[in-house]
Length: 479
Ligand SMILES: Cc1ncc(COP(=O)(O)O)c(C=O)c1O
Image 1 (cartoon, helix red, strand yellow):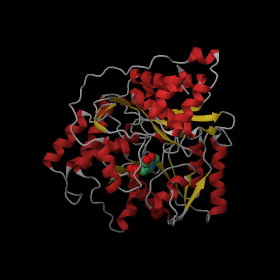
Image 2 (tube, helix red, strand yellow):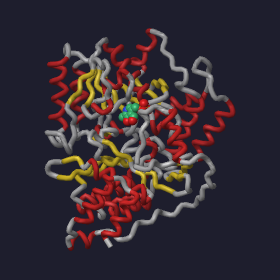
Image 3 (cartoon, rainbow, N blue to C red):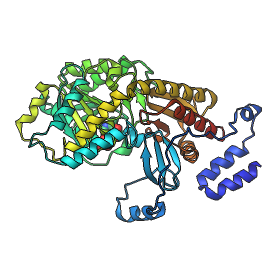
Image 4 (cartoon, rainbow, N blue to C red):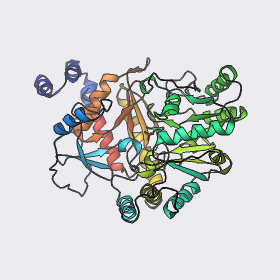
């Protein structure tokens, strides 16, 4: 039976998949393994929606056009790329009407749920009234949204500048820090991701995301990574490297420090406890400003707090945000204090689409939905539950080296050797494909590409969490 299964599977699989499947099947199954194998494929929770038939171009046709007309840098997940045509809350539908549990949320962007009716209504209403004006004229949407955002931030973080993306927000934040301090040097964390503009690519610290172009003025500090880092969970010890960089790599003064509280692209690495408070003190003593990049962790995703930095008990000087801020509409923002914000008055500074009424209407609707539907609480409860389930899988499967993160910002790192922490690069691709076959979409990241990134819309339910964990169990039991 095993041989016929292998034969059946190998018809449709790549050489890598055939290798993995054959390797798994030819492994002598111990009694323990047999007992633990999950026999029945899990069933997706019910959902009361049937999409209309899709009559558009096929996936193959789209792929052919992509190859011809889109940049060759555009890449896709899965051996057979997924062709999505509709989204409803935490679910996506493909061209055949098949439903998927979306645990990647457009890369932590669809916070309220796909096509959330309140956000769609706000976008449609505003589009009918006024689609674009620039900030050269008065309009209440941008100010109402700025006021609402400011109300969610601590201290004197009250002044908002809108952008169109996370990269733009971080570029601006870094420039503000440089202008305010009169210094050029910025410190970021190894393994961090902050965007792909000229300045932000310098702050991004993973070679796979850096081109060989001039990137000046950023020093990369030791990453306070509790799983792979040399000091384990001792945040204070890692922070000493920030002082060393200042002492030995700069004039003694710096413009600032930028970091995520939980590294998203880097594989859901939650900074060691206490790290940010020590690092912030060191940076402030060197005259620098502290920038919190909340592009992935913000907007209630961590569940315990609205912002990721709050989990470390710090108050930054500048906060940058994007992704979930607009539930999928292009929008980003930089929030800082009135005093720091003054530096931008030294010259003209302008962004044509920044603060666009349609985008800010969407942002305002997002804030109201998070509040009305208690999405932060849901992220906390369901996120904790899912993390527990994933930790249960870690106890069961050697392949899982680490389960980490908070709320609905979770990571599962696959390793072929737990002691050596050898990245399970091929295995993750195989399991990810299997999950898709079962109807579960997750992301992947980390420097070695061996970490599942689980970042669903915050309306994700306990039933969805069970389905995801069961599907992972089912897939892993077949490795
Ligand atoms: C933490 C973080 N900062 C900045 C960015 C860049 O945002 P964008 O892709 O909107 O430019 C990203 C994108 O993934 C991110 O994860």
